[in-house]
View 1 (cartoon, rainbow, N blue to C red):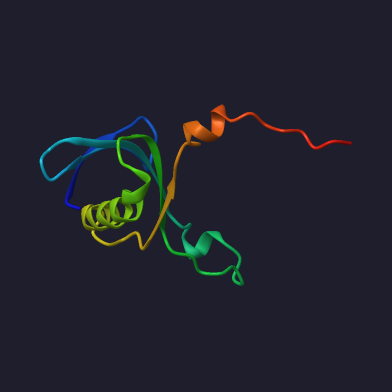
View 2: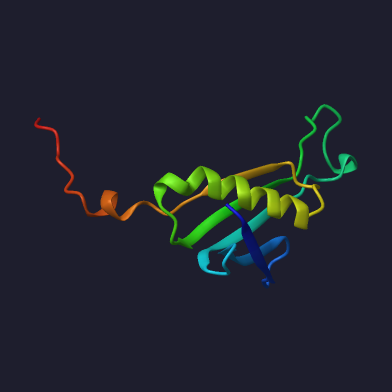
Length: 111
């Protein structure tokens, strides 16, 4: 899946909004990117573990099917890593709760 990203600044440091389009410039998703940058080693205890930068991708809206999620994430991750010059090796995706789960009746167990 070929994707392109339109990256927008926000009022917060290390936080961006982005729209994602497919190869035909059709809308696929709106995402919020939150980048966690490790503190400088001088700001943490000597025995603190070393950590890498990471990015959270909060999918706010999308028109992709559940069958396309893995391909969407792989394609979007590749584009985002390139945009951020491969400085962020870990990308984590978060999605809203599926509508069908929200509309299901919840059965209470009998006491």
